[in-house]
Amino acid sequence: MNNPRLLYALPALMCAGLLGFGYYLQYFDGQDPCPLCLVQRGFYYAVILVFGIAALHSPGRIGNRIYCAAGAVFALGGFGVAARQVWLQHLPADQVPACGPDLFFMMDNFPLKRILEKVFLGSGQCAEVKWRFLGLSIAEWSLACFAGLAAYALWLAFRKR
Image 1 (tube, rainbow, N blue to C red):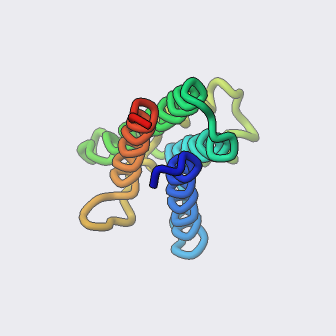
Image 2 (image 1 turned 30 degrees about the vertical axis):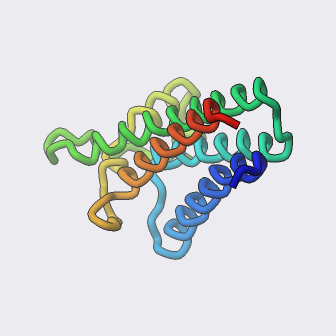
């Protein structure tokens, strides 16, 4: 387990597995992702990219810190988006924002600034919970995974070789 390439590949493989499960839920279980889910997917792809390149590169000490810092930043970004979605899911029903148009409609009809505002603020669709495992929603599992990824990146950056 002391192989640096494997240590970098682990978070990339974990994110690939999570994305694969997300696509399974979307295409085989009929659960369309909300805008905040799509943003979280983007952060998972960013973590895959950073740690995948690090696994191929097998950097030295300074490169290790750079890759791990980038991985931690993307994981924390995903953590923030997942936290927003969990917050929306726990709002009382009368305080949940109204559902808006879907992302593809907004991309065809709205300016980029308005699309980004709508996506990052979330909508009523982001507050719906259609699936649970061990009592946690997809957003809550995503929150935990992003926290774990950030912690792992920081551990990897400062571990003794």
